[in-house]
Image 1 (tube, rainbow, N blue to C red):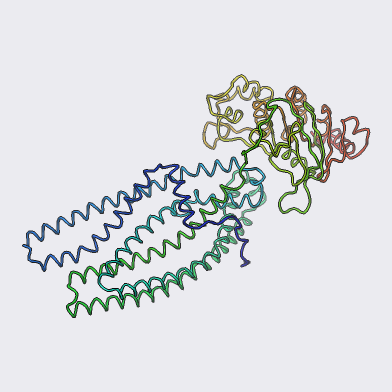
Image 2 (image 1 turned 45 degrees about the vertical axis):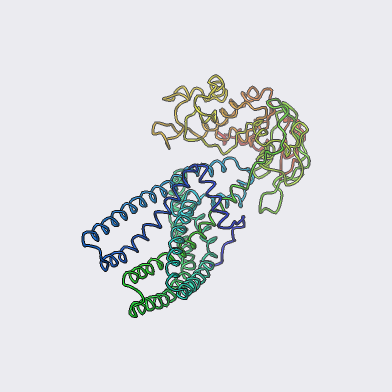
Length: 610
């Protein structure tokens, strides 16, 4: 296994206190201000209850050496123990309630994460850095109660408890001996310094750990996806997956050891420091009691304080170390939430919303992250209002990239795109999206009702007449009427056992229904008939002209026979438009389009395309 460190996460980093204030504002958003009163009460009782326990032996000793009667002594001790139990029960209730609220907050707050994923700039979403940010932020709210915002908030609660407790113990010790207080503080600082060094060394491998979990999540997702089951079994890929998981486990063990070793060394050194500290402290107290300068009751109190102080200090260092790690998670979540924002500020609305538009590209180039050449290069093009345009060419020619640029999902690396003469970079992104209805080649359906899949709206908000017309035009109405609950039937069995599974062709029709229901003035279809046989495809294209009447339309196709009815055809190669014209004019040109058309025609005439 390679032991080379993975690239560091290069997003923004924030201080631990900045992250805590952010988490508190986030907490207030979902839980309200009352949560802070609950947190304060939790801290108070969590500090008071251990103090009362530490003071109990000394109080009993003081009572026994006092002049009080046995009955009064028993009464006072019993009263103290009852109060201690009441405080203990109250503290336990508040602690559990606070932790429970933190848990519910984390689950509820994940809505912010999912909303951001759905609303962020698509170009950032598709980029490698964008996917890295998404994965890192996911662990803040979805990795369980031990990672992310929940243990971060818990950590500050515990830090407050340990810090206040330790401060009170130090004050009590200082009242007995200032030199002893100074010694305890120096020993504590030495212990903190050792653990800080270890923590810094351990943190260097945090990014490697994140990368390992990204790889593990990917393998896990691919392995359990039932769509991949056929290939895994037919091509006997089980051994490959086993090797991949074994490699990840090896990497995990390596990183775990690298993170653990500095902490083990720090733990050993810390134990030596604490041994010296306790030796001096106990020796001093014993001598004070032997010489009569310290009564038994105070000796027992200081011994209890010493034991509790040790626990509090170890707790503080452990909590600070954990907060440092969890703080990185909060930083990455914040970085994700602040990146890829669709900027609506100062952006103009669409002047001719809902009407046919002219789209114009001016020397547009686009290059994907990490690539050494443009996917789309120097394209200048005008699509007239109401025009039906076809994009054809081999795979990788840049057709889908051009479509994504047209509908605003990608932004030109250079050049400009205009809608009705307005540079789209100055238009409201959300308003611009509303002008487009797009069906991409990679179709998917949500595990909700067919109605919700088409309308993308809540039940009860549907225009049923428009829904019915959309399903009929897309050729899916007959299938819909045969479903158990009509268009209320769930599409997939993932959430509803009574749901139905649609075929690939039916899914494409479903997506076409969605585009028709939206009724946008610009329609873009990326291989809309890829899952249909040639006969079904021919039938679909006979309806295409009617579907896109009075709309500006662009569609991508590999089957060139389907482009005949288009006003104009663009043949793309290597990200450029190399031929342009009608079906007839391109055949007469006898160029690449004509050559591809003859090859496809011969393929179907020979019967191979059936």
